[in-house]
Image (cartoon, helix red, strand yellow):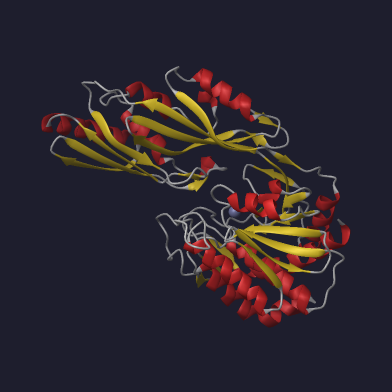
Length: 459
Ligand SMILES: [Zn+2]
């Protein structure tokens, strides 16, 4: 039934997705009714009015988040997605907020993470209502607006709304994810060497978000004289060739400006990116600039966590990974932010303590944010029901998986991540040219309608 509904409204399903993707819902400065900025607030308003136009009940929780629901019971099952996106970054073939369709793929920031999946769940709910399906319990779609940053949207939601019986979030990949690594971001502060004869770093910064591998780092260095700057410039250019960096240097009197380009990636899979801050640390660790021992230490911070003594792995969730995602020089203090994804059997206190013992005493280590790991019993009803749905659409023998990513599944009981990426496919989440295949989008509308119905009837 849902299949036919999708066939009949295909064009509208695609155009509404494009409209949502064209709203630049990156986090911005607070506006009235939009604590996370104008973009996320607009995206929420779009979703809620669209749902209302189909006769669904909606609520906007002061611009923090909102929901659409169908059914009349007090108890409910929840589908949690998010409408905020990470900044577009550079390197796009198609404009990131145009929702260009080429060869059956829609290209846009948020196409797969997570506005596309959010829109598919809205169409699933519309389909259930239009087809007169009446599940035993109420189904509520919750749209968060701060998922890519601090999850304040969900804090706000649970201050005013009761917890659901369970549910899923379409914010990862199929089949489903029953365990998620813990997440911690550490801030490491290092005082700048004040009275050094060495060249001084005047400006230094890289990265925008804790959860994105930085694709750009910049530094300005004062060499105290034009001759010294020229000499250092020659040395740096050689190092750039030797290290095969994508870097650009400019000389102006006694100063050198360096820009290094890397490749951004999701911080839960740091090995797929090229970390521009790490590359900058490698370049500056050659000895001419001040804080040279700091640069040497930082340049060893690879994805394994070995340099901080926190490496390790477990059977459920695999190895710990880390990424230096943001750094800057501010008021004579170098600040480095390290995003860590740790196995479910590790704990955050131990990670912080170990990192401290591996770093010089003068360095200050603090915990900026932290999410405990998630593990739902792979034999639980929510996993069993969703795997049944998966098997009815996919002909393979894949089973429940684990991830280093963090999803809203952690915020409610009996919840897992379920889709929306199909097995073996890449949607380039958080990367240039993020996309989603339209056929997969339309299939997801069917999959999610079935998943919502099953959970609403069984939990
Ligand atoms: Zn997401």
